[in-house]
Amino acid sequence: MQTIINIIVFLLILGSIIIIHELGHFLAAKFFGVYCGQFSIGFGPKLWSKKGKETEYEIRALPFGGFVAMAGEEDQADNEDMQDLPVERTLKGIKTYQKVIIFLAGVFMNFVLAFVVTLGVNVFAGQLPVNVAQIGQIEANSPAAQYGLEKDDVIQQIQIVETGESILVSNFEDVHLTQDTLKTKANTLNMKITVLRDNQKKVIDMKVPYNVEASRYSLGIQQATRDMNIAEAFQYTFISLKSMSVAIFAALGQLVTKFSETVTQLSGPAGIYQITAQVTETGQIAYVLNLLALLSVNIGIFNLMPIPGLDGCQVLFAIVEKMIGRELPEKLKLTLQMIGLGLVLLLMVFVTYQDILRIFG
Image (cartoon, rainbow, N blue to C red):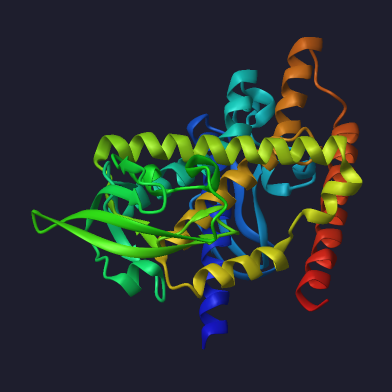
């Protein structure tokens, strides 16, 4: 049953990213009057189709992409439905900036999807640490659990019995005591922890061991959090999108400068499914939505690459044609697009092979 749920979530995530991307191209093309013969989600054999006033809407068997067939595209030159259209209803008959908007609209919509989803998560489930050293959770079998610290206790002071040193605690970072800050190499320290509980001060004697992995004396507590307000939700949404974008651009940069090292770390559909399954099995909707946002930004930025067949190269073609004052030969553009799509397909096959080795190796 869990496998079925994982597959459904995977298809919903992938489908929503593809739909919103192609919808961007479609709506922008319609806005500028360009004839759109097909709006397809997926590639390969048709599973379902419905003819609209002009456009045939389709769902195809392979859910790893999609396309909008627009009049004036090189691969639509032999499409009978687009033979007798007025030039102003084709990509050839609109202005360069309109072409650029159409080609970038898919990427824009991917960012819109990521923004809306991340903002929604922050508004309804976003958490920030409180400003004081308040305990939000106590780890099982920890010194805090053993000696009687409680959730919502506010730590105000820590006294080190061995040295007599007293530390006033104003925030949670003050609780992170290291051997360097305390100038000791002891494996365990006796501490007197002063907490505020139900508006009353209470002193708790504790023996606190040194945690080598954390590089500090660990009480075994986690900080309390609070809900984000609207302003903070917007602020942290922009911060998240910026972090995602910077990380993806950095990865793409390494793919160019350190191809052999980086390509083996990429994930294809199989790897994305495995990550989706792991996130889904946590049962946390927020984690699933955050993954959706990350993948949407990832796919959007990938489409900006100047590889023939991707949106970035379409923009490049449009700008070059504007600069030279004429269209590039259709055969040249179509050939480059086929080569580019072939390279992308080869990359997908390779990373899928890598995914399978990682999953079953």
